[in-house]
Length: 547
Image 1 (cartoon, rainbow, N blue to C red):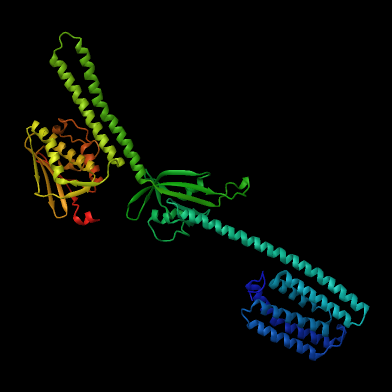
Image 2: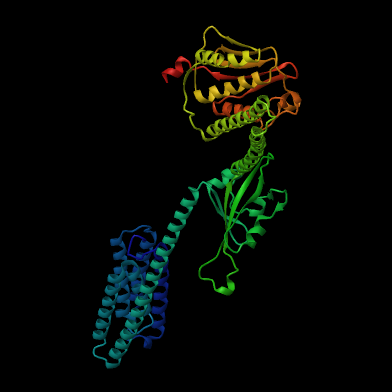
């Protein structure tokens, strides 16, 4: 039945179906009442007519009741039949000015519900025809004609009122439906935007119960369980960076405007911790008055993992602090030495040897500063990923190049720089700059801290890997220092280490470069017996070349 008119709803169709079953009993009872009180009817009442019309109505009502989904045409036939039955009942039994005229009002409403304005006008026209025929049947009775006219006027007023009310009701429902559709569309858009945000977004009601969240929230909290209905306080057990517990809901309640904090620590079940930046936004309806401005409709939390950023910030601040401290000493020494040399130039008792020593001391500090600048430049390139393009590197050629580059430096310290390679070495595919600087730092470090003996550069191929190792017979590294040598600016307290100038950045850079080319430095050392630094790289085989 809901395929009928423009405004037909399933509820209206069902009401029409059930109402049709109850009307026959009303018609029969009213007809029996007229039999006992014939004065109430303007014409003689026939019991056969009463039961005939009632029976016809009941048959039509039963057919309609079991017709679950009639077409618009069948629905129109049902309405026409009901109109005809009521018209016959009025004309033959009750007359127009009877309480049964209310049945026609019901048909009028149903006609409008099914066929809108056309159904309404058709029903009104049919009733006007019934009034006209009923007036003719009264054979010119003036009082009956007046009653019919009054009944028709009242019927018209009520009908037009019902039409206006129905129109208004349907218009209101239409606007409400559009408003709900727009609201639903806006909500879907907001949810789509939230779900595509990389930051975790959670909205709560005024009591802190989660209402909406995005996929990033599940990723941040490392869970697949729905967050809806959870209390934000229990969902986010937080502490500050100094270890104090935080009730996030209380923090949300205290916010009057947008508040951003980045000092929260969230701990996972496995005790792993991350640092969170949380933006808290109170939600207020735009129509609330000033005196109720403190009331909130809920809260929005925007969360972001800033663990790496904060770690880099702290590392950068520490780095700047240490670099400035390390640069200050050699600069002061170089400046002081050069100033002394300038003073000595004008003194008659100053010898060339004294001036030479002063210049030598200043030069050593300048060389130290130059080394630090070079180390910082290398570190900066590694951090920024400059010149990290991979290329095919002939390992045998690289090994001989490095040996030839540092053999003279080793001989100047009366050390043997040996090169031990496999008969045939393959090719590696990595950054040439990073690999060369990594090996250079290890080799120069070995030469620097070896007073007697030798430094061995070993490059061997075993299966799909090439191993690089630099072994020296130097002073070695104590067990306690082995865990620290790859830290920034670390230098052992061993006096023999302090005898050689250094920035403490060499091995830190080695570790950084190793990470950049996808390997790890292995350290084997024993105090007074030397050290071995080694790492491996995969061979670029034929399969890799074909790819």
